[in-house]
View 1 (tube, rainbow, N blue to C red):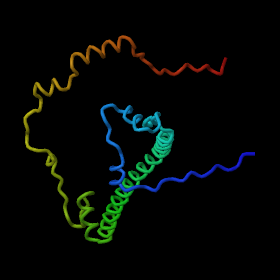
View 2: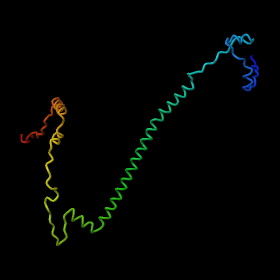
View 3: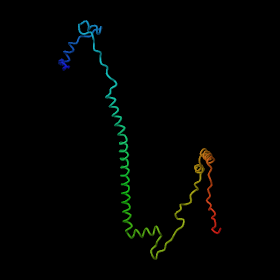
Amino acid sequence: MVGPRPRIPRRAPRPAREAARQRPERDARGSEGRRNRGGSSTLAAPTPARSFNGRLVALVVVATLIVFLAAPTAKIFLDQRSQISELRSSISHEQQRQQQLKREEQLWGDDSYVEQQARERMSYVMPGESAYVVLGADTAPHQAAESSAEQVEAGRPAWADGLWQSVVDSAYPQEDITLEPEPRESSSK
């Protein structure tokens, strides 16, 4: 059976100044100078920094997963926010329309307004009054004809569009469909 490991005492940390005094200066010979002083001949190689870390990969995977799970939810949230703003504007528009209709309803409750609208819209007159209708009063004074070359050309499609339409029409001929009643057989046969 193996017993517990013996404890190795650690040195207490030295202040930076003492550590700098006790470190020997490096000479041009590098590691050979250390061997001459009498210590161990093997040097500990420096540990390279790891550029590929498992924790980093896990962090990237978790962050990507969070983004992919949160993106649809965020889109739904933004869509609902836009719907809410549209509905609020629609509600305010309908409230304004409702107020306008209430004002109009109050106007129609007034007898003088109803009489005025009947005269204007339906040409009603009170008993004893005479109504005159002027024909042609709505037309404006005689204006010049609005047919210039630009307007005539604007009404026609461009020549390339007309050419293409003729090609399409020739490829897919229009069938003239005439609906004629089928002759009924007489029941006297």
